[in-house]
Image (cartoon, rainbow, N blue to C red; front, side, top):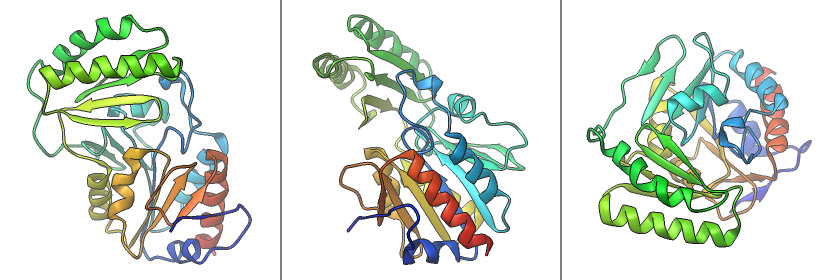
Length: 262
């Protein structure tokens, strides 16, 4: 059962994960490290979250990663990521990776068919253009349809048309829905894949994963007894802890860093 963590309070699970031998802190970006914003490419990590990430990444045997549905190219932009960064990246729901000291890692799994994503974009764009406040985000392995600036009625209608299009022309592509976004991918990886990759890459004895959306539950479901899941905001979750906002994530990371440093 998910319990609410209040900033400034002690929690046995948070203390335990802080004391694991080799710790990975994996964070979703939108809605977790950053508030949700109308323009997806305008998202940036809260300064207080970034400060704690830098603090944690400097600790021994402690590794930080962003795990996102964003394509790697876009993820590097919004995270303000540089080639000398200490923060790992898992993009496209676990189909793309960047590791400190190594750079881009080859994606596993089947490649997208040549021209398929471009055909999807071309077919979806006229639908998107008919609806006010709806936008198309091209992705490395598919697309996202964003409706953060649309009404609920417009969102419902646009998503229905996109669903019908994909069912007819791209029936085997993976569908994901989230906060005001509908995504389709030619790849089957999810954030559960990212958890396994990060655990293997860093030989982790424990993972703290935090996320706010339905797609983050893929990761929550594969966390073990020595890991800790944190849900940001409302909704059913397999996470052990819940916080209300990205600002609370900053407070939780502060508590984690303080305990681990001690």
